[in-house]
Amino acid sequence: MNQYGHNFRLAIWGESHGPEVGITMDGVPAGIPLAEEEFEADLSRRRSGARGTTPRREPDRPTIVSGLYNGHTTGAPLTVVFANTNTRSADYANVERHFRPSHADWVAFRKFDGYNDPRGGGHFSARLTVALVAAGVVAKKLLPAGVVFSTRLTEIGGCSDAARFDELLREAAAERDSLGGVVECRVGGLPVGIGEPFFDSVESRIAHLLFSVPAVKGVEFGSGFAGSRLRGSQNNDPIVDRDGHTATNHAGGINGGITNGNEVVVRAALKPTPSISRVQNTYNWTTERVEALEIRGRHDVCVALRGVVVVEAAVAIALADLWRR
Image 1 (tube, one colour):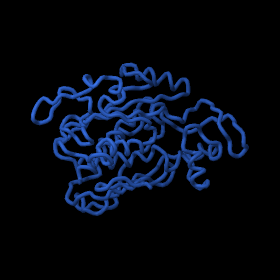
Image 2 (cartoon, rainbow, N blue to C red):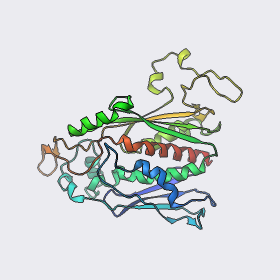
Image 3 (cartoon, rainbow, N blue to C red):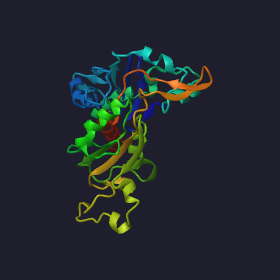
Image 4 (cartoon, helix red, strand yellow):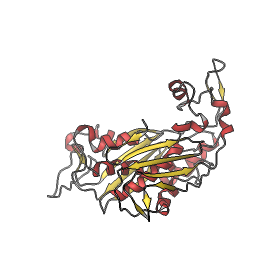
């Protein structure tokens, strides 16, 4: 279903080209100061306009329609809505039955017997991540004082030299292609003891939500996959004081599924945007043949650029859900 969480519970809804998208948050305690203006800093990080992002410009002005009174949360479900104001649904007329490669078009058509909304990907669209960012703003308010997030794009197209990112984006755009990327989120100031063994470990809860983000295809913590190529003597984190600080942080701030007081480090790999304007050959349901398809519409050259704040929001939401226990 379209819900996540136990104690900080989310329900997300809407379609890319529908009237609006939004999110309802349950489990938000009463009395937390909140204003629509407080969402702007994170929403602006997701907004398009920079090189490599979609030409589709949405104002993304949040409207709080429930759970807020006199500038404070009421304890009732908190609902935030975003209007879709800049849609061009005609761009998707040629892909309703001529399915785009590496999109959800085909599986949505089969799962929902053709009743799904195909415009812009419908409910599968990354457009809905604006709602996750809004939930992330609230989630950060639920975490202990002193928790600090530091999130950045560490790779584009396999390159970790940030000085070359613009050049790579220009090249991909000129070739009517796209690039993937890696986002790293670091969380400092978390107390020891957040999380549970096994099924509700910090890793499993964060990974669950990150893999719900369109384009995320890989998640790792600490040394991650690189750690599998080390010896135990190299990958271990010796404890250096009674507060649990460690000489290294290969574990990414988590042991046994529980925060250990060190910085939590998580990375998400985002695939290249599958909507590229280069002609591709793919199956046409109507003609029952593989035919050339040119995807119209407005799309990101590298969705990871705007994915930085989405990854951060997902991590914050998962941590808030665990902390609320």
